[in-house]
Image: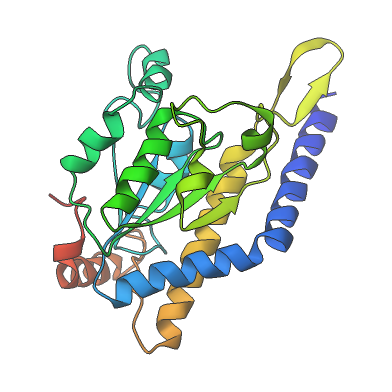
Length: 250
């Protein structure tokens, strides 16, 4: 039984990845180009996610093979499940006004780009993060499951979702509930795939951005693994060259 369930999960994840590749290609290209435009114009890059959506945001920050300019926009208490109790993070996502307080104290400014990851896109925090960031002149890329906007109700007072306040939207195609498998003997659906798909989506965007910069004759500010010879020296050069646009060092 366990082997067959494992195969079913892999099949489900692969199917979702194929859908995203086939149906979101244009949006991925546009998102990568937006990030490349931002880098070329001297802007800074940020990523935000709450709860498990933060995993995909963290995966593109200070990452071997990734863009050194991607910074994590962290909201205390919602970055991961390390907050105690873990349920507090979910509650904070629904607090009106929290996004404005975070942005007011962040380095984000007009001309920057912000990637916001929220599977449901229905809570106050990601909705207000997108609304307020765009009001500052920041370009916003939303990574979400568009299905939630038609199958659930917004928890924000405006009745809107993250997807309604973005310059570009990447649809992860994840079904409402984020569980790919069911079994007669198990009372709840299980095996979420949103992290697999969303992380792949964002890495596809990063790859596109790097290629777009190279096409313009601009060396992409990429990091190398510190576990390969010369990696630390390479990264030291990149981090120094772009020190005024990198905020995870201070």
